[in-house]
Image 1 (tube, rainbow, N blue to C red):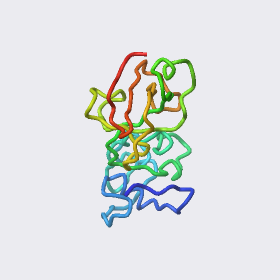
Image 2: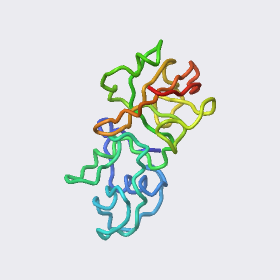
Image 3: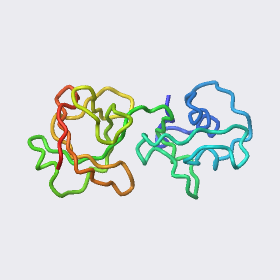
Image 4: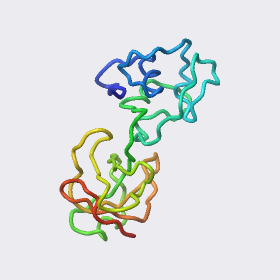
Length: 177
């Protein structure tokens, strides 16, 4: 299980450390103390602050709002809904139900992240094999239509690509904007 939404629940540094190992937030995985916030928040991973274990790199497939940035101040809130084992690529988008040219028109991306199952590429590498979903782990497909693809950063970068997603969430077309 991922870290819960910090607005809905209390979070535990020990449980965040368990999630950062990939064992799961609610697991009973043993973490050797001490646990330093600087080590569990470090984007590149490691234990250079002296934690009792080394942590893997932060999984950047999580939306930027749900992962630590490694910068001070370090806060547990940066881990809200963080999932070390997420296997979907997050993307921001401009959506249009009827045309790729409208989706690719000038605009500001939604600010929300959607996810597709090609975890190795921001723009899916192929059609008819990848799906797009509204969450990192669920199976609710995005709305059918055209999506202009943007990176999922503080300052989303347009990829000059669009994809068409059908009503079951299957990505059936990819093109240039």
